[in-house]
Image (cartoon, rainbow, N blue to C red):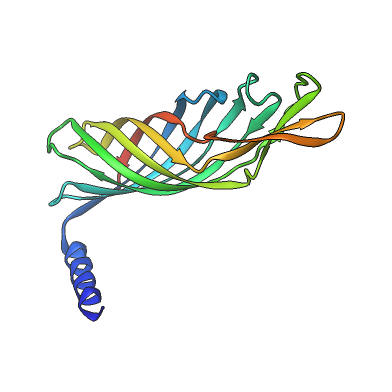
Length: 199
């Protein structure tokens, strides 16, 4: 254990000596794939720490989404999730245009609310259970344009993988639960378009 700790301290010390750059910026985020949503979009703030001698960056992102759930599955629901997370990105090409792949972990604080009267089908209604917050694994592929200049234009696509949640169907007449079904409501594909500024 002491050897592992010593090696970790040594590596962190060496990383601190490497040339690096810090960028801050913002992005607009748009949902492109999740059957449980009619739409989802929102802004994010980004801080990126890039190493110049190794093709890796560490990115911190925080933002909020504005969304409405699909009436076919979850009528009457809106959601305004706040998110915060970190990702590690790898840049295989060192050039003016740099593609990259990354993996990250995010925390989502959900704000699911019924936007109106629930849809009644055959004397039953549906609602979500256990949706206060969730953790998500994110896999990303993107392109950084003008990578060697103080201002970078980024385009990326991310796929989130999260824990499933319960979709509960209740009989209105008897007030009993007749079905509890696991659904992957938070597994989304997102496109981000943004700008980063070197500081």
